[in-house]
Image 1 (tube, helix red, strand yellow):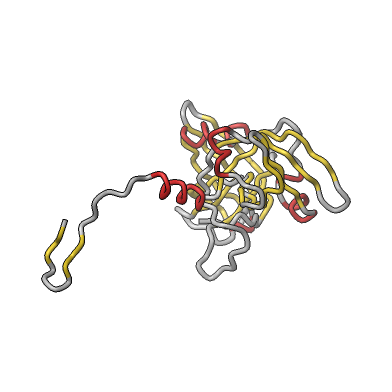
Image 2 (tube, one colour):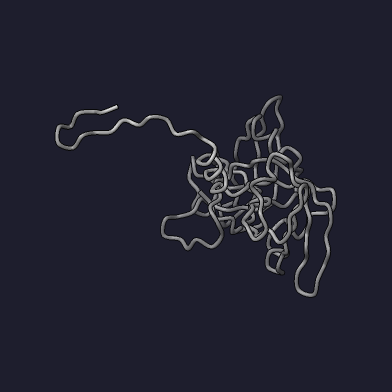
Length: 214
């Protein structure tokens, strides 16, 4: 589990594409400093497993399967591209963002960037199948960054980016037409499931007899 608070702006060293998978080597000294084989690191919001690491070089390698390539923009990365990196949350950490699983739901396209005095409003496309989970003032993860939705329509949503986010994440570099990874708030999915699923008969136990009752 992650929080959507990016720890480090890393970069791609190598992207080796196979027929149905890829191997990605990235530079990120901070997130690699305590990495172990099998550790989880979010790369642009995608939870990936460390298969090789070199703390001295600040480098780690992950495998990316076909499902991940089809649902995210990781396959479009090139050597030198910046990436948002976050280690899995420790139980003792402050919860600065919102619940982020690193399970990307889909992608969006940057439609517009409008600079302000100390911020920038960025508007993205909103996939039809995800629109019901996105609400104004709700949480959404864009390229692994926990953000608050400032405006939403049937097919777009906007966020307001503060200087820190612009400077320390890939969102400061994304241009109109670029693809970003989206993860909607998982709590919205659970609420939808609870409200749309018909509860079935539940077995109970009589505490006086320990008999299972239908």
